[in-house]
Image 1 (tube, helix red, strand yellow):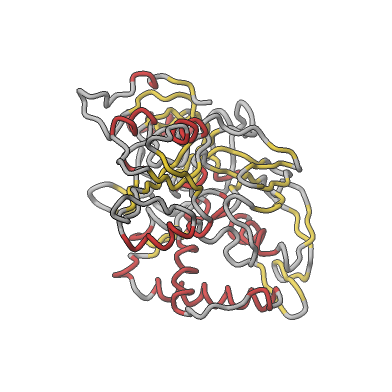
Image 2 (tube, rainbow, N blue to C red):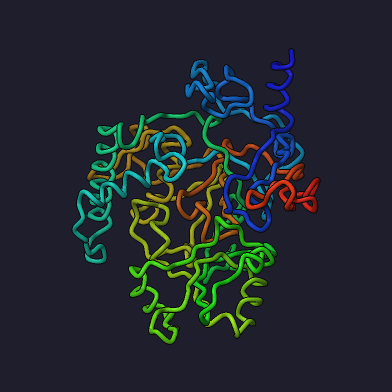
Length: 423
């Protein structure tokens, strides 16, 4: 009876969730335990009804699937208290988590991994600017096919490759910064919706390289700033020197050695505190885009980066678009993977479910999700839209918060965060 009760509460009312990464700091911290309301946006009828309660996709100890793939129920949502709104923090199933290489599932999604492996197989740099869209697509298809084959044929290196239904994909938590029908653009780190800047979270963070005048930053100062040990990176490897010099971090001590450089995520308040300490801090430089990686869509050549992205239109249920060579890679995954159509590109045009067409009407609403820790967040800029059938619920309250950098008698429990409402 208890298991049955937990099963229904977990599916239809609320779910416990622990923040595993720093992508939403400082709004939500690593070690926060949340109650996630399923009623806020309406609970979903499970895709995989036969599953073990409290296990997302894998049984601990046994390392086996926690669910039976048959039967598979279609997406249906019970009416809830409202819909996802702009700036809501939302828990959802990871859209690119439909296919996973088990040994990489905690670090890299399958598609990014496949493209990366393909580019290593064909390392010669191609000048994309000189190619047509069709030629660019052929090269991306070549990368993906080669990388996918490499992964599938090397289970010892990459692990078993698994497919997971929507409700058994990893749970992610991000902030909704774009709603269905919006046109989103990021300009110098500022998110714009339909040409207007949206309100930024109070503790928005970006990555910086921070060079001191010689001394090291103390643990007490890091604690005052609120930077966890996991987010503190002291660069002492001489192999970094050329790159640091290129971005202007050239302060040296009397012996000619570069003064200490840290790689840190900073809010505006942290930046102001550090830059104002002229006795300790020599220079602060934002992390260059060389560190960003490939933006979504992975098979479209753009010059978009984390801080300057788009414009991109977010699909809305019932809206119809005209498909072109420029936008097909953006919406192809929605059409095929999320809405279950067969799409083919032939010499004479685009075919959807066997019919030639250049138009498509979306069956679901989609959302654009991003972390507040903008340079430490794997979000929609990397893997695209979040379909409505992936939305799990809304975090309501932090019921417990544990600081992994501290001991039980040294402030491990963050008492000021207990029963804090999530905004």
